[in-house]
Image (cartoon, rainbow, N blue to C red; front, side, top):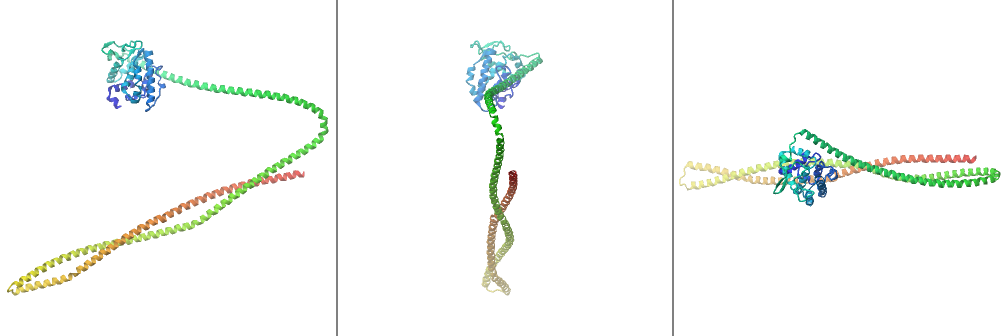
Length: 558
């Protein structure tokens, strides 16, 4: 769409296919939409349905350029036929056919324009050119101007079909064009001559509607013809089927006639044999009369023998059935023994369930004990943490006191050095008075007291020692805390990997055992029901066998 907006000629061509042709199902937004030939075929079908049947081309081709080229070749061939037969015009169709692959594969718009020019000449030269020109007049003026320039270029390459050397552009049967000879040959007229104004617009619209209705009717007629062809093909197939069925029936009838004739021949032979037998019967009637009594006796014996044989056969079948039922009972008993063994195994495994539950409860109790131990350890760890904080505070206070004592010691040392210097100065004076002596004695006493206090400063070393002990104790507590945390983490990990996994496995195994027991119980119930049904059937067979034997005994006694 962006390319059509940028190129006025491309935009005019897209507008031409949208505004002039009503049979185009998907109007083009760009010149590349024309490269498959579908839009151009649909547009030309409005000009001539006989030459351009839009149902004969491939659609929805995607990126298959080979099928696009096939459509374009068919379009060019039909367009050439239309030019020669209807317009009596000609163009360089052979050269254009060599560029069809470029249009289909690479979307070459320069050679595509040659197709568009041929379509424009066909539209403005056909029998219904007034209708199409009237539709073109309703286009945007700018697009209409571009379209006229394209049409003028197109008429320059059109020639008469009967005279290959004459340049086109002077179509006598098309629109009213003036022959204007120039340096480049004949040219198309200006806008006023190419697109004349129509005084009766309602008549043109009515004619346009009638043309559209005619095109719709033609398409509907084509559809009806194709459907009629399909129906005719179906009827032909049905007739072929009926003909084949009729031939088969005729063959069967002939076969039955042959069989009937054979049967009639056999019947005639049988009749002759019967007649001969009747003659023999007449001769043997007296002999039959004499042997009638003996025959009756023999018949009675034969009947009795047949009854005995039938009874023996019945007993033999019942005996075979009884043996097969005994074999089935044996297999059922073996299968029942296996089921009993499986049930006993499951019961033994079921007896293990209380011990597993007990182990589960013990695991849960151990889990609770471990959780309580962990809680106690956490409480103890919290107490240790508070004690460590307290010791850290005491260490801080001790450090502050040590610093204070050190500052006082430095002051006393400085003061002592000043007092010593004062004593040396006093001894150097030759005649001190009494007041000065007392002041010096007071100062000396103060120095001595301070010195005694300095001797009492030995507690600083003690405080330092206590401080070191506190620091060591804090380090021990920190190490103990770290070991406790490691032990706690390891204990929790062992608990998770051992007891929780074991508990989950016990639950899974317990569920599997319960499901297995339920399935076996259901299977045992079904087999019991089947066994009861088979026992009933066996009882009924034995009962019938006994009744048959009793009945035979009664007949024997008779």
